[in-house]
Image 1 (tube, rainbow, N blue to C red):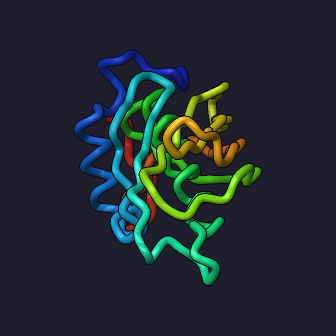
Image 2: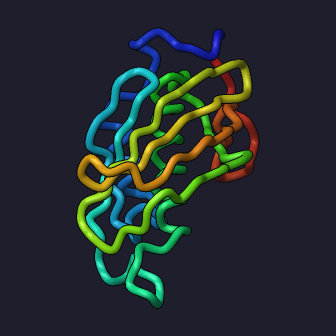
Length: 154
């Protein structure tokens, strides 16, 4: 099956939003999927005290996790339904410090192949660009949670 699935074979916004809600990391950090279309995803974070480092600024690790999550959601939107996505590499530039507000991460798939997806992600607070990331993901068949075996196609 080609990596770019027909829209009927892809996971829906509702399913991805629910999947994100079941992720402990995303839930603990307060991430919310707010927009999704083929190859694009937007994830929101309302900054709270738990997101700040000792100087009162949003921690770089939180920003990296936000970018990673938006990139993963964008990749899922272009991959076949029964796919797993895992980060291979994440490179992020922190452009401006941010101490609060509502942050949006916009992930955009630049290219998706048989096993690799490359995503560009911009993080913004209002219209202000605060970080830019380039993320590479592994894309492959989902594994059965019970025994680690790949799910059969039929």
